[in-house]
Image (cartoon, rainbow, N blue to C red; front, side, top):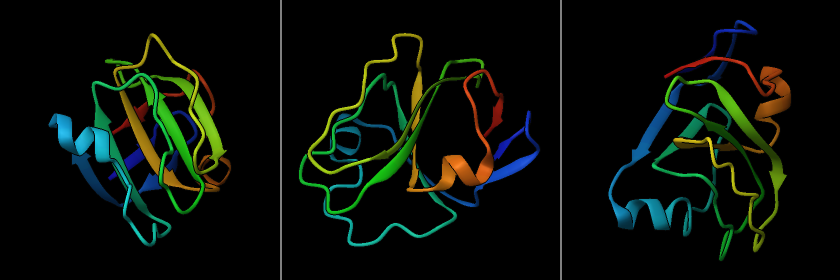
Length: 111
C-alpha cells in the first residue's frame, strides 16, 4: 500500500515494483488497463518515457526519504517526463490519482 502521510490520503492499494533494468525500461508498456488503486514503483528512476503506451498516467517522483520531489499529472502516450534529479524512485498511477489523493511536492509518502 502507498499512503500520503502529509495529507492522510491513500494513493494505491495494489503495488508492483520494477527493480531490474528490463522491468524498469518496460514499465507499463503493453498493459491494456491500469485500474484505480494500482501502482507501479520504478526503482532508481528520475524520469520516465511514455513510448508505446496506450493511456495517460500520473507519476509521483520521490527521494530516498520518501518525500515527493516531482509530479506529472496526466502524462500522455509518447511523451517524456521532466528529469527530477533529486528523485530516487517513481510511482506510476492511473490518471487522476494525484488530484484524488491531493498529493503535492514536499508531501511524505509511506510505501
